[in-house]
Length: 466
Picture 1 (cartoon, rainbow, N blue to C red):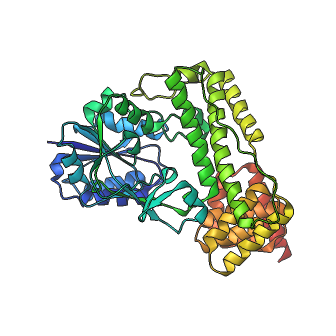
Picture 2: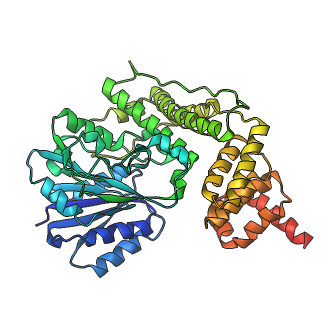
Picture 3: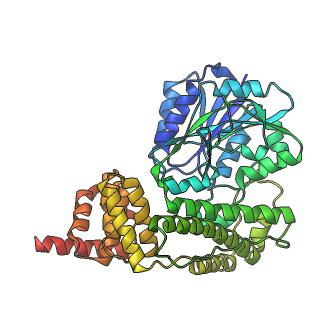
């Protein structure tokens, strides 16, 4: 008899998904007691083939492939939940490895009839060492790291009752009855172009469970390793993550107040003038912190204004539950008004204007870091410069060289193209394109016609010179 249903939403992470499932298969539990439901949320890679191969290799395991085209991880999770057979739902992400006693510990925790929600540590598996500015967003105690921006949690090696909001969707076990009683998840991880439909994900469900007075338990054996690629250790990722959080918190407030009245609006942080008496890197970190905070405000205000412009969107936000998770159709006027809000927010986003001298100082620091083989930190500095000074020569070229050294050819090609828009005759940038011809061809398939024509002109000019 199936007691537990492990539900994994996934999209274009076939390689890591395979690692995730293999770690579940390694559990020492009778295979008849649990099922693994993989809800494919529109993958373009070989996700389906990977799962079908696993099903053939492990016929004694209850592995099932589901396809859910409606965008967003909530859609995939609810797709799985509505087809699950177990009395315990276990939601995990497609970039984790579960600990060896993970499933046993979850089962034991639910042996206590008063427990409705179970979670445990999510330990980082970093692709590379994090830059030091990230410490501002992490709590480190006795070597244990907790960081909401990266979904990392480690609060000790003892079983304790825990506030339900600290059980996150990458490692989230809940009784089936409680899941449906509390209304399930709210919209989560919506694609950027549809971000006005974003909600507060598992937070809304966890708050509801807390409101109902149900117990949540933390067990250190309910542990997952969470893969953190280098792309998530950049300023741009943290800005995007905070923008997303702003949208989430706007959604939470609107639901709490049953409308747009009595909303507490966050304030922007103002950028100060640069001081010649303070080290450049210290000022650089302060800029990062303010940029990330202001991205949060941008997301919050975008969502507030979008809901104000659209009755359809307000109705979506205030839905009782999302078991019918199909996104609503906006009429053309609503779509246009929401796009105008998005454009307006982007234009008024408060960003520091870097003095050229300061940018040059940062550029020199990046070169020093490259010379000392600290390419990741150098790249982080270069990303900051190019964000503020997109037309500064040689910055994108240096980024392209760093990305090539880090074996990230697709991003290197993009950076080289960006450099060529500033310096069309830059031979090093052209060389990077020529060394990555297959990647360039793939990139051109999705590039704008203008970009394709520009690259063709640059390469043709280069060949004519040879």
